[in-house]
Amino acid sequence: MKPSIVKGTRDFGPQEMARRNYIFNTIRQVYELYGFQQIETPAQETLQTLMGKYGEEGDKLLFKILNSGDYLSKVTDEQLTCRNTLRLASCICEKGLRYDLTVPFARYVVMHREELQLPFKRYQVQPVWRADRPQKGRYREFYQFDGDVVGSDSLLNEVELMQIVDTVFTRFGVRVEIKINNRKILTGIAEVIGAADKIVDITVAIDKLDKIGIDAVNDELRSDGLTDEQIARLQPIILLQGTNEEKLDTIAEVLKDSPTGLKGVEETRFILSTLCPEHSGNAAVYGTALNNELQLDLTLARGLSYYTGAIFEVKALDTPMGSISGGGRYDNLTGIFGMPGISGVGISFGVDRIYDVLNALDLYPKDALQTTQVLFINFGERETAYCLPIIAKVRGAGIRAEYYPDQAKMKKQMAYANAKQIPFVVLAGESEMAEGKVTLKNMATGEQRLLTADEIIESIASSW
Image (cartoon, rainbow, N blue to C red; front, side, top):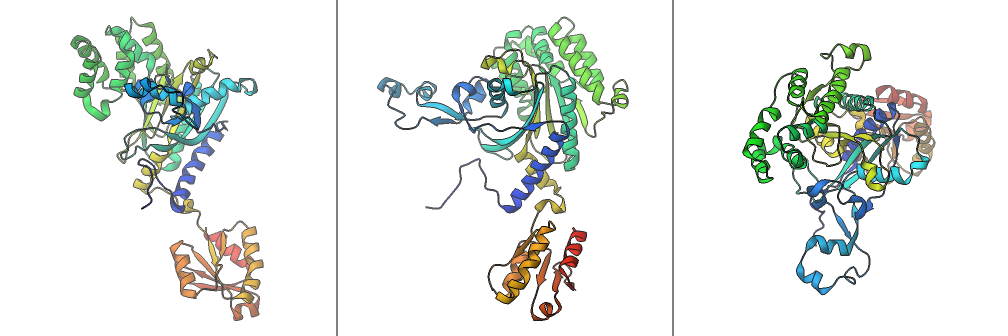
């Protein structure tokens, strides 16, 4: 049988892993600049932990794990024949693969509360799984790189997270648009159009605006029970144009009778005025102006049901791709695990999509591949004994070096160096050993020089 991999998953070879590690290391360095510390949680969580945290659509995308052993032993014939999938799954599955890193983090905070110093700033990079339909930029197994702050209500946390996003993509050389909205504003909009009980349906529908268009969104709202009048009142709000300041002023007037909505406007205004030069000149005072554009987008909803305040989404400007980062404020996620009142805010970098963006734009630095820098050619036992102390010294200087293990033909060894894009080759035959030196060959130019071990180190280090 021909081997294959599961749809929506990918293998990563050495070159891909080198590029992914460049992504991981860049994001990790930025998080640590802001005082974040790393944790990890298990791939498996109990379904009790996972279910009900992502909305109805999210629950459908959870990968469930069959119980060990005879998982049908406690299932009745009636349960089998009625073919109720959800009910049956609750009998034969107690665990699932994590859907994201935020809910496991909330569980972690509750279980380790006594060990944590609040506010607690954590970052986490691990794979997550979703039973989604695979397509470009959407996988069933993919990595997220999350950063969260829990135990603080301050909006300065939102400001710092936007700075982290901006710094990361500036370092990658990717131009992005950072979109911001607030779930309190969306709640206020639902209130003023007379559909407060439909807030979840409204946010799920308008979150699809970029994907399916306004007509399809309106059809979905209609099927969710909104009247034509309510949908008509929603149109000028979600299609609002203008500067961030103009949008805020307009929506503040629309929401003047909604305390919740006005609170969302106030929070959004603080974040924008702190980060954007066009708002009150504050950026000059705080020194927080961003390199990338921060745009208020009232159609941004982020379908996850646990968000309660500011929400963010990041899109690349120079190549078509879905969201490559996103997040928001959740006021009581730990409450579902018996610890109410701990507010948090976080962001998640979509590593796999960032990988695709950097590939499309060819933005990896030359040294991101971290290939072997020098290959020592194997001429035989005497030459090997001569070269091994030299290669040890080269490696001791931090230079990545290989010794070809077999006494193969020179052509084969050189082909190996070319295939691995190794820039330098060391040759040591009778003449080199007689002089106590080796020949260093530059594979790009063909230049050859007779050098000592120290001179090899100096030459390679200076060219890197």
